[in-house]
Image (cartoon, rainbow, N blue to C red; front, side, top):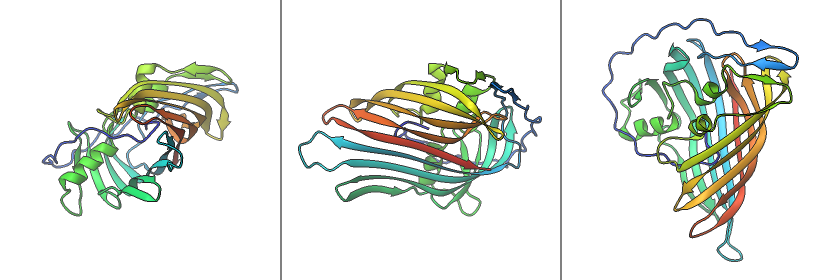
Length: 277
């Protein structure tokens, strides 16, 4: 998920769907290795039949240099989905049923509002790995707009989850800060071709265990070009990881956002993710 809400490139029309294939049942997920002062994160896709609910939000509030009295611009993206794992292969989910309980993005400025709910809000779809991702709706044929919106919402479907892939196999000592590989951070933060993101850095410091989960303090910075000008974002906060799969299940990051171009703007941004399983 990106440090600020971004647009993705165009998507293809729906693809003719073959009968669903039966995925391979994965081997049991390896247990993480934990000690009093360190932890080694394991890897593995969630087992077939796993169900979770996830809520995420990205909010940016910008003040633009357009003269005194210019109202702030707020960009708010909210997503809530329920995921059921239907098939996996290796560390990747290859078929899943996803209900988009809430999917909306709005721009608000001076009482004016643009955007709103996505065409997939309130709908349930089955996704299967393909190029591009195969999408269908059991209740009614999915429209081209729906298929494009699902593919936009799930740019890495059928691949190992980028954040989990970046963390899996790493050993973290309590209090030690580890700088993660920049190329992997860029993939994890990118929402797909055309999002304008060109640089990303992230470091994580292991704080300790919270029950069966690992807690980290994280620092994230991203940069690129959007809307004709450069942007930079920096955020810090807490990330909670399921050490059995290396999935980030709770994220609370906040920080600064700067955009330059025809109109310069400065402001704040927040990112949150909460997964219930």
